[in-house]
Length: 117
Image (tube, rainbow, N blue to C red; front, top):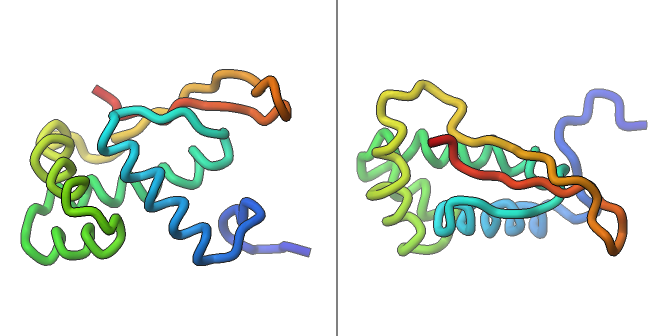
């Protein structure tokens, strides 16, 4: 039984899950919105919001923490230069999840994860 277990495993081991979250967060920073399953969107949302919080801090340590997680210098630069300044006066809630309905192939619930403007 999974009593008091936090988070969804999404059918992956921990390293695969961490890589998935990093890739989806990087795609969100790069493109501004991503279409994924609802379960993945709900799991990636706290990671993306934490990255924006690091971007708002803006110091060298925050930049290195973001680089260690996202593993792409271009994505980290876009996060600190473009995304984080848009949310300077906002105290949280940087993302929005919009449900799309089921996917045709496997009936998985789909959603759009995007930045709040």
